[in-house]
Each structure stands twice: as structure tokens, then as C-alpha cells.
Image (cartoon, rainbow, N blue to C red; front, side):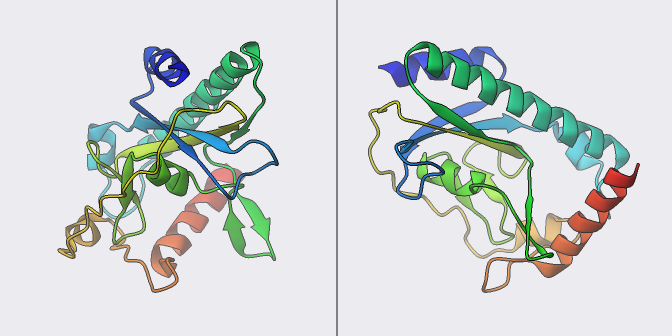
Length: 196
């Protein structure tokens, strides 16, 4: 019942979709439940991208991430007001491990899949069941015991490679799940963004 109240709260703030799951590999002891939020990106802004991300996309990316972080904080405060603990995972925060291995505190894609919101495509992007890859994700962990059941993750990938062909950098995951060409583009643009 509490899931419905929290979902309505987040949707009223402008979030596009919300899912709930229980995780075994939580970010903190006792915070075994996760809320995954989805925010749909602007079709027009994404459609402008041809060879590399545009300045408009970078602004949109930062603005949407800030919006997600704010929604996660509001959800956390909502949970805390009801007597529960929470930890938010920033929408776009990478921890540099070993000088090259950038990773977040927890995979938003994994939480979203476990919450039944989508699956991972051939290009390693999260594919929301309704909005496709035009989304950004956020995750919050809590000790609030949501009424959740295991979901079957429906693989939307049929091997057609349309996502790879449509991607400006023709991203396609290797066996280890990484796409070196796409990763190089993202890192280069992130470094340029940080220097600006």
C-alpha cells in the first residue's frame, strides 16, 4: 500500500515511472529495498544528436540529473518522515577506481531491471518498456519493507542491431558489457565539460 503512495508522490513531482524491488547486494546493511525512478528525456534534444552529444544535450543531461537527485532527496525525506532510513544514489556520480574504472555506487540499470521497468539492450543501455533508451535513472535504498515480488525481466532485444545503428557512436557492448568506443566518447566529453 505504501508503494502506491510513494509512487503517486514521485509521479506528481514529474517523474515518468517508478518501480520497487528488493536487492541482495544493497549499498548499506539493512537497506534491502530499492526505489527506481525513471525520467524521460526530450525526444527533440536526443534526435538532434548525430555524431556526438550536442551542447543542448549536455545542458539537458545536467538539468535532468539535478531533477532526479532532487526527486530522490524528496522521496528520502518522505520515507524518513514515515520512520524509515534511506540512502540516495546520485543520478550521475562516478567513482574513479584504480585510475580508469569509473563506476557508480550502485547500478541504476540493475535496480530498474529488478524493479521491472525494462531491460538492458545490446548497446548496454537501459531500455524502458515504454520510452526505450531516452531516459535517465535514479535509485534510492531504504529499510521500508515494500510489498515486492521477483519480476521476470523481459528481454526486448531481438538482435536486430537497430539500437547500434541508431547510436551516434555505434555503441555495441563487448562480452564484458563495456563498449570501449562509446566509453572513450563519454569520458572525453565529461572531461571537456569539467574543464568548461
